[in-house]
Amino acid sequence: MNYVCFYFVASLDLNLSFFPIDSNKFTLKKYGEYIYGNIILFSTNVDPMTSISLGDILDFVNEGGNLIFATNGKVNDNLRLFAESLGAEFDNKGSRVIDHFSYSQELDTK
Image (cartoon, rainbow, N blue to C red):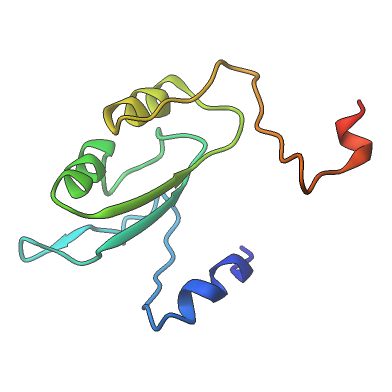
């Protein structure tokens, strides 16, 4: 995994922990208290999540935790429902977000 995108976050003197979404070592709480104040979740699928559920993450956010959530263009129905429960929604299947300031002319003209 390439952690280059997290160098800025680490430069803020924040402790970073990285876990695969299906890791049994990842837990949000210890002794009834949240271990983290912020979660960055990159997921294309919610099926393999074993140690926590989307409901656990939703509770974390509702109790004041911060979440950055990203996925790819293959958003499944479970992720759509999760996003809706957070007050966000994904566009229709097959839609894309295009950066018109920093783009590839080769890809944009196809």
